[in-house]
Length: 317
Image (cartoon, rainbow, N blue to C red):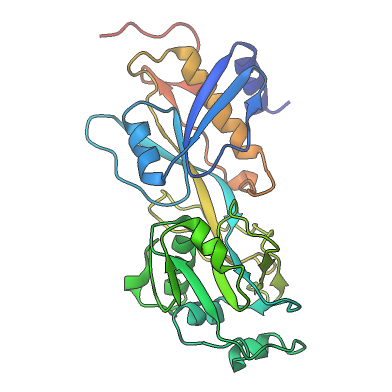
């Protein structure tokens, strides 16, 4: 039995209660042995503020937020899953293929109609309608826009000033709420970006060209070559020949030192067990990082590494 898994079972044998989770991604591991999770959805900035204030055990976020204030100790950004950003569209009867360059040029307002030569070249056997492309984007910060902007700027198709999670670029419709954007996608000729949990009726999703030249489905979220050091650094461009090229990361953010306020050793062990299991668990929307790319869960209690912690905590100074 692997050492990490054996340790996890030992912890679960003496752990009960709940882990408090806040953020933009609901935990895809809701119960583990006697351990439950309580989740409250909130924006990434608010989730991190709740964590920094000690009102949550962990924040699950997929885009940057406020830096921690002074005095709360080291904060750990642990990557726990990969997800695809989808290019959703409404063109009945059209099975659409795109590449990142053309998608970026569409949202920049450089490609304006569905039968444009750039789109036609990617869809040689498809009869494309002579309709305007009704692009829809959100003016409020969101993870899907962040991932797309990073890809477009990194590829050299957008200016660096558009590298942000709220951009207008050349979009036709600029919305503030997700439901308004989903309503746009009911209109024939529309195109928008959606994160993994965002759904629309009769959703059509374009296939994107992988680095190897294949057109792959948005459900393919593999090919992580290197994991960035923090949520403030973008995911490196994918090199895997068959990987979906437009992906983001979910980060679990927590305080490394768990002995604060009224927290005890059992609560710290519960969080360690939850994070370790979350890294290895996939779901309909999220894919675990390859095992060799998963950073270890770093937690301390009273300054001692929780993974090797034995015995009662040291007395408080």
